[in-house]
Image 1 (cartoon, rainbow, N blue to C red):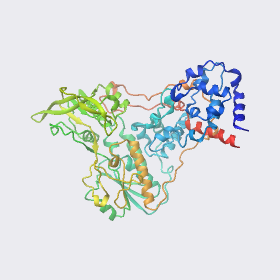
Image 2 (tube, helix red, strand yellow):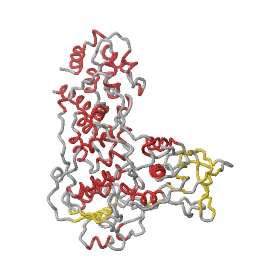
Image 3 (tube, rainbow, N blue to C red):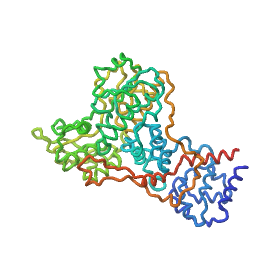
Image 4 (spheres, one colour):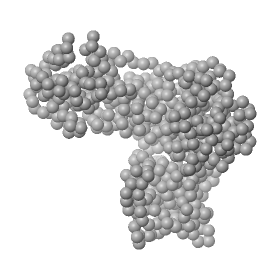
Length: 586
């Protein structure tokens, strides 16, 4: 049967030509009308006029999210999606999406997002957790602190709001049992020994993947606790230490050796590790060194870099929190420091940021969380001098800024406004402008080159330095980044190290059951398009701002299932179109 014959048969089934009233309600209801020249009524009209080829050979059928809102308002119940799907099947290959759906492509670690959402929607959180584990070893951590780039690409946002993907990952982790040795398959010991320097997300992930490939892995950690920045850079109200410990313990139970309080510098050095039989070394020490402000008064007592402040609090050291505290910066570390010092008893906390809210690197949800707790944010404001008298901080001199042309970061460049200086009283200042790695120990002859910004230079594809058998990744290479980026870096390093030592790379591991694609019909439940996003519950500002209790709480089962059912299942929609294409070619 030719392409038109297949389509006309399908349209006859849905009664398209007999019942359409030309009312236009479908276009009015469609959330995409007018975007990218999309209009559902235009597509249907082409079909009615037998102009199937003309409309099929455009990207318009693939613009549709298949949310079904058009069907829900059609007075005659026309199955409009059953018209869109076969149109997709005859679209030119150039318009057919390749590979994974947008959410999975946006994830640096390539997590199968629609797959685990589908399992949660079916009431199978343990299986969802196992599916996530196929790609990353820290689902519970990511479910709390990931910046969720997947949500920024979620097509459900084109209908109303993105799926709460990150919160659902956390739900699956919290509902599942710990990772067991019986579930994760370890290849037979291959006789090779490798070292990982640093136990942050990049180091833990590399160690996890290398161990699964049969390597004997030892992690060297300078701190007295494992986790790197996860342990000493992210406050407990965001990432409870019990969650972090549970997931690290699960990784170590695979047979990975961890040496705490063991910085790799003089003893042992990189040369020593080689002499001890480590054939490949992955450096993942993070960026734990705060950058200086280069301001007058910066060396006064009461000025403490944000990374030092958060580390000291995390390790249980005493920190004198001022009554009036100023935090300088606009990233996650700045927001975390401001909210943490408030929990230590400070009465007034102010964040200074030299651009506008729009340019802040921190996520909107974190900024809003700080504001709800009473933290004030001064935008377009930069410090010019820390005012000190007798070694005691009195305040900070600031000036107002305005935005000019774009700088190297593609953000508007802030420039001072003349005669705009003013003073804010303070007795504690926490600079949080950026971080860099401490490479004072690093032997360039042995380990490789150091870049101009102060990180380790690597081949961007393999993460290998020009030192023999030395690899590096995470923040020590790219600068302060996200947890999911560090995890992706660790995965890449593990693959490269395996190939360097003669392996073929990590085999894809199947831990969770798969739901047969053939079970998917594409039928949307009544009111599907209008289902509202469900966000995770939170402690109120009054409850949380004087303790370290976790602010964001976990979904209950009913909430999680409802939210997961909002997924458009883009992956299965693509599969459905390909099924139509294969039928046409039979």
